[in-house]
Length: 124
Image (cartoon, rainbow, N blue to C red; front, top):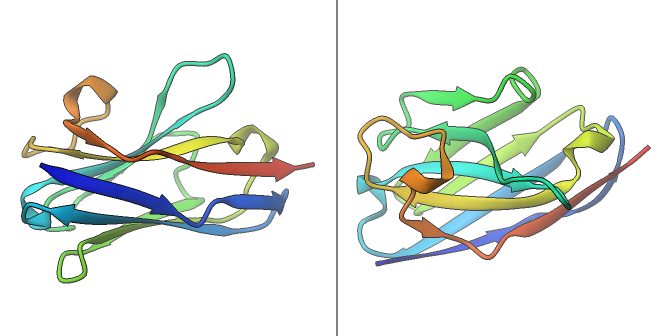
């Protein structure tokens, strides 16, 4: 079992930045691939970014590539999502997830553990 807690969400103007953090507790953090997903009202949960167990590989959705950067610190059991050049369409609840896969999945069903989510609102 692993517990995940997200933080860092909030309200920001378009063009601004936010940094989301996910803190893990429980089992050894480094055995999990980590992902971020988001869900806007009335929409399905969608993939944002993922990072491998070691942090050597990262994957991004086309919609955020070049604007978002994902990193992890296995010593601190944290994974951070730096979000720059935010757009109103980025508004959603952002979720952190942990999965056992060797290659970080891009589908929600492949992840085993989820945080409670943190709201990100980007005003125009």
